[in-house]
Image (cartoon, rainbow, N blue to C red; front, side, top):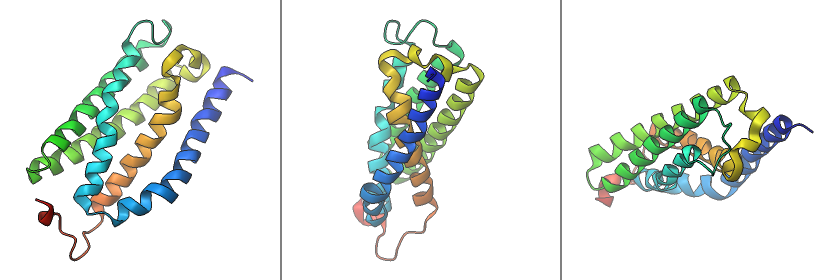
Amino acid sequence: MSQETIFQIHLVLGYVAWLLCFRVYFWPRLKSMDRLEAQRAIASLHSFRFFGLVFILPGVVGPNLPGSFAVFAAYGDFATGVLALLALLTVRIRPLFWSFVVAFNVAGTADILVDYYHAIQSNVPAIAGQFGATYLIPIIYVPLLMITHVAAFYLLARRQAVGQGDAAAA
């Protein structure tokens, strides 16, 4: 079986496994939470995206991981992580908090979609071994990130239930 096929199978199964876990364990809890607390939990997960900078760390990834993929992925993750951290730091200043929540979700979703585009254009699945120690990021971590971005957008669009105002959490 080729590296490309194995990588694609891993990626698809990463989404399937996380969707099953998310649907059973995380989604019911997020839906029942106050919308601010739900977004805060999602921002907490995304605040670790600074870790994506590892894609440009020599010796961690192979020397043939295309720069067109690695550099954009690294800095896109870093920017998203910083925006998520800013959301967490501004939770008491609601307009700023909500602005950073929207910003990190838009930036993070765009980052993942553009990373997929760059990966296809650069034929990254065929050289998946170049991920080295970071192989788990696109296979395990990225599917969860994308699923939580979709959940965050859904929760942002959903109307707050009566009696669950996030002003009480201030």
